[in-house]
Structure formats: C-alpha cells, structure tokens
Image 1 (cartoon, rainbow, N blue to C red):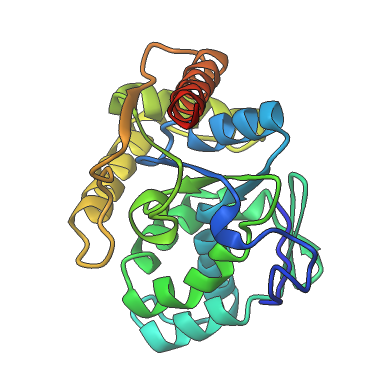
Image 2 (cartoon, rainbow, N blue to C red):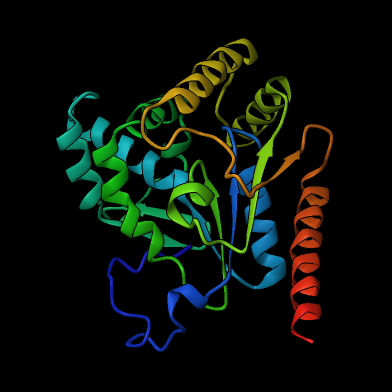
Length: 244
C-alpha cells in the first residue's frame, strides 16, 4: 500500500474515475486474519491493498511519541491529518523512520482502538483512505471499510473467528516478530478491544447489510483467500450473464 499523500483527481493521475475502480472490503474484529487475507487476495488479483488499521496505529504511535493525551480528540485528529507517513510494500515509514515493528506493539494497538472511537480522528483519515482507490482495483481491510469508507464496494466481506483462535493467531504473529506475548493477556485485551469496537458511537464494528460473513476459525489463510476469490468471481460471472 502506498500513501500518495495528495488528493489529485483521477483524471490528472491518468486513472479511471474512483467510482469505476473495483473494491473488495474485508472488515472484522482484531486478529481475525484480515491483513494476511487482504494481501493474499490483492496479490492474486494484482490489486493494491489498504491496511486502514495501520493508519490508526500510526496515529496512536505519533500520540505516544508526541505526548498527546489519549482523550485529546482535537490533538489526535490533527496528528492523523498531518501524519508524515509513507507506505512501500510491507514497509511503513513515519517521518522517514521504519515503524512496522513499533505499530504492532500491544500498547499501540490498544491506544489505536481507543483513538478509533473518536469521530474527529475518523473524519481526518476518511479522505486519506479513499485516496487509495485507484486502478486496477483495491482490497481494503479494517473495521468500517464496507459500511463507511467504501459503501459502494463490489464485494464486502465480514471476517470473523472465535476469540480463542484469534488470540492464538496474534500470539503466533507476535512471537514470529520477536515480541513476547502472554495468551491470557491477549485474550483479555482482545475482549476489551472487541467491546470498544462494537459499542463505540461512531462507525461501530458491524457487518454491512450486504456483506458476506465468513468464519475463518477453522480455515487456513489460503483457504480464506480462495473463498473470497470464489465469491468475487461468482459475482462477476452473474454480472456478465445479465449483460448478455
């Protein structure tokens, strides 16, 4: 995912109008596998990926480093609006520094969940997220991609998994990155984060009315990717038949 940092028109950039660029959204609770699956789907389709959660984590990291209070909504929104961030493939840079490891710390993730409940912060990041929509297509993962950011997406997936499975996945991810993690602590943090995400007043975590709910508890990442591709290809086949 590459942050253009601008809002130039699609015509000026030589791209198709944003509304004509296909989008697949993948929403769901933390550690449901959204990121891995989104990258897998995008790789198979040759599309761009938007990891919207990274933007909230970057805002949280900037707040921690700049001493912005967790309840200072205006200060947090300004930080979100002016983030000096750059995405290059799997690498994430904040103010020229690689922070892919830093934003995956649980302290940052927990603050990001709190920050994401603030309307001014979500509004500050809305245009930034929509700017990722460019040809040939976009796979967007997050919490409100299908309900708020891309409500006209061609396919909306709401990816769920049992909380125990999600905690074990997160522990494995952290251990692979060399970050120590306690399963019980992860379970507690995950349940608290789920409660915040589903109960917040602004853009609560919930499937869009036209989303497909997919339970990945007993599926591998590859199986989940294939299931989404099958749904996408099935929709295209139906649309093609209607045009005949």
